[in-house]
Length: 155
Image 1 (tube, helix red, strand yellow):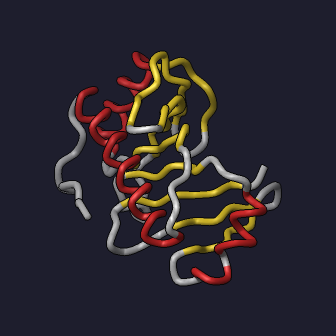
Image 2: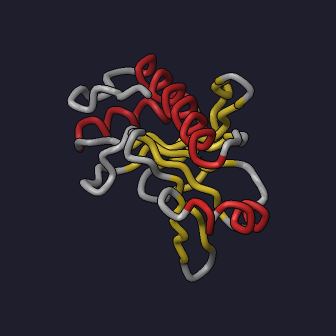
Image 3: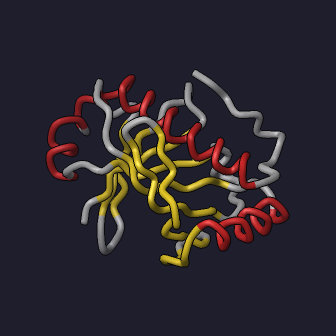
């Protein structure tokens, strides 16, 4: 299980793409270790750890995709998907610095939420956390051996 050097901020587009590849790879390994399966990934978020890093990555984002939406930071639809194994990352968000998010990043797994919840939530309660919001709910996958998070989101 790799760990990215958290003391070093992402400096350029190449390092941003490397971070996307890292998060994709690590969340897939984490899902495999928790539930014994891999799930497709299309949307990913990189966490920033300082305001200068957030500003730099937000600027890079404008060059590699068109604005899609905003939630804790800008999200774009990439002009060219980032291919990582079987995954085609088509959407990328840069998250504002948040002391509660020391990880490298997170992604959403593309799978049926109800099936996932029914099959895995109760039997993996140490690593799967149900989060309820007013308009939707999601399950967070976390393992302290990994410096990434992943989610399965209801509609």
